[in-house]
Length: 321
Image (tube, rainbow, N blue to C red):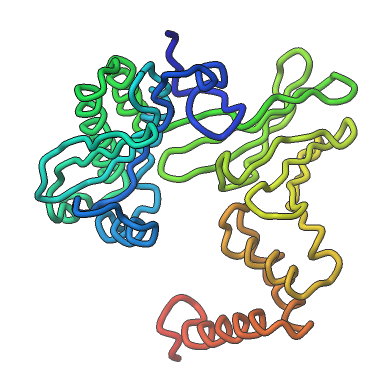
């Protein structure tokens, strides 16, 4: 079976290609879920709490494993379709019996490795080793080929944990003169860009427009022959990026254009905090002030808090003259 390289296309969120996912008897998914003892299955809150307590300082610590699985899966396996992987201090590495095609793999890890994991790259490497150890154990238990995982691990390490893949499909403009595609890049954080090429394959324009991945970015669409709209899928509603061939782009949130104080505040926080959108502090402050002027309490409190912080520390120093 042909393996997927690190530079791959995602037609849908998930791992691997659609053809392989439609075939039966495949291990399709795997995920490092957290760090706990084996006495019982952890709740979602416990997984998040222990995940943060064990590896702190890098919100993307898990991506070493994510890249690894994205490249290696799916693989043929008649016994299990998904692996849930847990780091388990003071316990042997072992696999539980699968339930409905899902198996848990418990990997022995040091009780407190945080002193040796002081950077995001070290944490990514730790998660990759954890995932690979789990896969080797599961392969022995469930009899699937480890060659794709060995190759994937080598690729991730040789690429220094950098990853590039396409989100959704390439779309041509109505006049067929241009083609647009969205690509996600990852090293220690996600960044997404829109590429527009001419019919001869030459690059017309490139925009780095977002800080999300395929979970937050929808399928692009052309708006006439001169503009591309990319929807923000992470947010219910009709938010989108508008990217023009004259090399201008903007983030649009039509709900805030109606003057709703709640939506003005929501738009402002996206631009100020940048959970998915490239930060724009000037525009974000304008929207925040508009929401506050409309009487929205969250906006008023945030503005007051920002002004208090500025009064204490106006130039990044002590603030005392």
